[in-house]
Image (cartoon, rainbow, N blue to C red):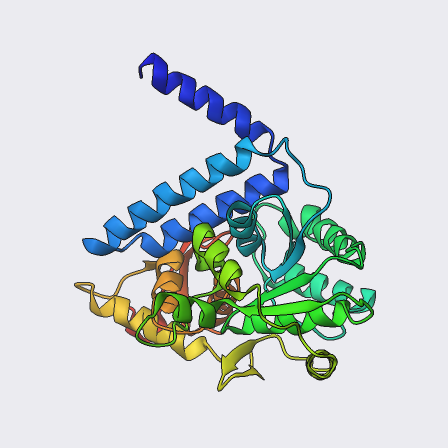
Length: 351
């Protein structure tokens, strides 16, 4: 590597050191999200992915170079459900906008009374008991990050306009109602942006992009969406109270899985995706000379590629393990992470 390249890498290293751990993680998560969705892309799709990555690189450079110029008087506060989406917004919207990402994925897991401490403890214990946690995230970081986020929301100044972001999926629609309920005593003007619908309107796609969630939109496009939508009217008092009531209804449920259907959040049984998982294993078996063990991560990827809903891979991996425990699937390896074991349908096993 020449002098110029070495200097560039050193400059990048110094700039990245200015980021907080949370900012660095969200940017990395955003990058991994894009790479995961582009892993099997070919031809034109790969070229588009490469352009997106170069664009993301440029946005990150601009962001880290401005880290020292902290804005204390934010022009607006943006709230979204998810750290990856928050990371993209921080890069795209710039430091004049405060971005708060609620560090959770509310499509799965209990949300009963989540606006209370007892409800949050119940959710934490369920996540700890059911989902794989190889890096001890739930044990060491989850509750701390949730508490910090709640404090940030509580500290939003009364003069700041609040922009709530959502999308056409169960996670962000649930998050919208939850976050709005947390803001119920705030007198701030609150604006709503549906990233899925705004993306379609702005980029004139042929049909509603159900697969577009806020965390899947490039930072520069999030900025364009915000600029396009910022002149719209805030939620009325009636609209706010209606969504707050919807949260209270949701928070009385005891279910652990939700989908977005017919413009509504629908609670489903946790076995809802089991058949989809079994069908995915069956399809992958059909590609083999003879039915053999398949990496759990490959199965999860196959499932995600065949459903329109945005589903957490950790929840799907939990259901995959349940199918193993029930005897529907056989396992080879130790299920510490989805990359550590393989499965196959029991009825298709060889002699």
